[in-house]
Figure (cartoon, helix red, strand yellow):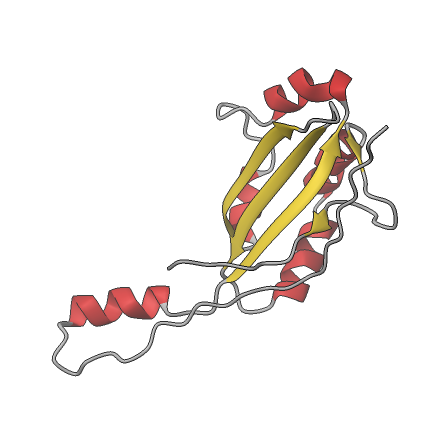
Length: 147
């Protein structure tokens, strides 16, 4: 039987826009200042239990609010989850988000303390199979970014 092992390390990439020309209009400068902040890009993977796929998809459907507002409140933008079945028959989720705040550790601590987030994770975590040695999603190494 083939086994698939994911070896992941945490590596975050940052994107900085530089070289603003003094001849730029104020709206150009304003737009660049909004996009020039440091963005922490995070990719993660976890296995999803085969018998929980439909329920998990329902919980994450576009019309189900879940904790979307909390993700935004704590600067986790462009949060996306993808599902893929590998040749071994198992289903894996890949998640991606961009953190745009100023204090990642503090925002994650505050998000973890939110009762609604705790309830959400209790439901979703029970549908997932963590990689050995991890307590939740496994963060993946970032190897390419094209701005």
